[in-house]
Length: 227
Image 1: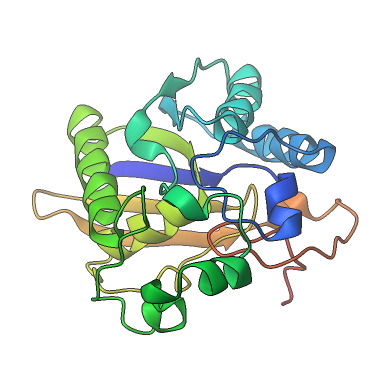
Image 2 (image 1 turned 180 degrees about the vertical axis):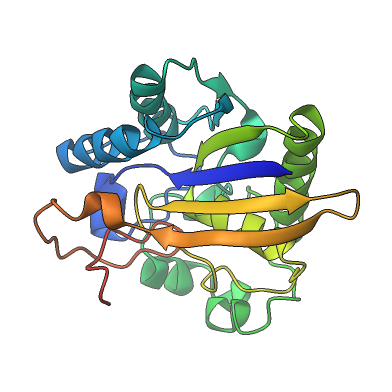
C-alpha cells in the first residue's frame, strides 16, 4: 500500500482577492504561515513519512519548508506539481478574465469538463491534467509501498483526485480544498485501487480565527469549514 498525503499551500493575497494566480510566484500571508505551522504540527505526529515533495512556487515551497522543519524532511521540489499556467489571464479575477477573453466561454468551462480550454499563452486544461497524471504516476512508482507528503495547489489537488478516482472528466470544483487542508489516499496493489482516507480535512486549523475571504477560481480561500 502506498499512502499519499496531499496538502494545499497556505493562504496568499491572491486567495483573498480572488485572482487567477496560477504560476505567478506569490508569497504566503501571515495567516498562511500560521496555517502551515498548524498543518506541520499535525503531520509531525504522522509516522513513517518517507519523502516530502513540493511545487517550486514559493507559496507551496514555503508551506513544505515549514512542514519539513517539523518532520525532519527536506522538501523535494518537482515542477510537475506547479499550478496551471493561466497565461495572459494571470493576475485577473474570474470576471475580468471573462470580459477580456470572451472566446474562452469560461462560464461553460466547468460544466463541460470534457471540453479542452486553452489559456492564451498558458496551458490547456487537458495539458494540465496530463502533467498532473504523469507526476502522480512518477511519484507512486518511485515510492511504491511508502508514505509521502505532497504540498501543492488547489487546482493540482483537485485534478489529482479526479485522476486517482478515475473521474477524468471531473470539473475542478468537485475536489477543491481549502488552504492547508489535508487530503489522504491509499493506493493498493498492482491495479492501484484507491481508498480515500480523508478529503479537505481542516480539523487541525480549528484554532484559527474565522476569516471571510473571496472565492477565487483555482485558489479558494480558507472558508469556514461549515460552509
